[in-house]
Image (cartoon, helix red, strand yellow):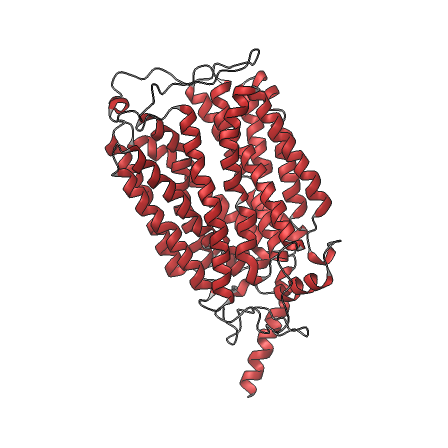
Length: 512
């Protein structure tokens, strides 16, 4: 529907305005520059926030080595895998442990207890995805995202105290951290529904969401360094303090809506509001639950994200074990090599966002086709690299290269299926992301169990099965999205204004 100032919105419900049509039809009026704009500053603040969030999430996995005094139990005699591959050149042992500074406590937590502590986060994380997205869509996401990070950071400061009180207290604390962090991604998507012009969605969401990869890349090696120099409690004080500082900046400079932002210029505000149109408003208390439940494009997103996350969580939880048991990298090298794919994923995620927006803006492909192409690339190529890992045997260089390529190329799908919620239902993007993220976390519980089953005999053949299964599930998810995915706004997501406009056009067409 053309607007008086020359902007137009993409009303995908109309036969005259499918998602292959340009989102902004009148290009005579210059688009306000993205650089230094309020919307780009918002993306940068989100990027920093998610960098902190993922640092808070992964720091325990490294700090656990310094916190416990039995992290390297002696291997049993029948674990032939320890001798299946030679150690990397220059490596003398695989049991290097952190040397804590004097006076830093350690705890006698067995492997099972450590596993529960590392998984405690997800118990809380699963609980707040959907309600967080729903409330963010109604009230706006800035408060929920800010409080989610601030609450997680504040609780992180209590980690040394909880650890000293016992493993049950630390488990409860980590679950509460997950409870607070669960609202962050749905709140982000709810905010972009009001802030991201359709032609800039991919790059803005890619910039903000890529903070997760960047934060992981920084946190993994930095946590080890802090543990060795200052002691493991300093990890949680520094990370928690960083999150609290970020929250101060967030609440000072961020607004839920461009209409209420105090420092946005009029040209940019009008551009955002006009280009998004009625979809840039809250969804109220009621949501179309039954149409959502019956929505084929939404289920395509859910299934595809679950399939993609299977490989992601397999590598996240089992890659250190593979690096240690099969490739024999020491702990320090293991941490560094586990972080390298994250920086590759960060760069590729940013690049894919720019490419996606460019293809849509230049009308090379429709939104639907762009999302499907990037999803195919982001799931099929990583699947091929995973299979290659399984057949790289004891070649350390090839194995690490293929693992890095798999994770790096997989970030292409961030501008595909992972932002598709805002395409099919902008007003409900927050709650939809909460739904898809909840389902997408399920493989984080199941994949490690399956990996343990396949590798119980500790052979290369068992690990080959792990990589084949992950690759096959990736391919299946890509096929589902290719067949059933969509980039058009769904009928159940339309506003009353859009429905009235569609009915008016239909009546006019019949009259003619």
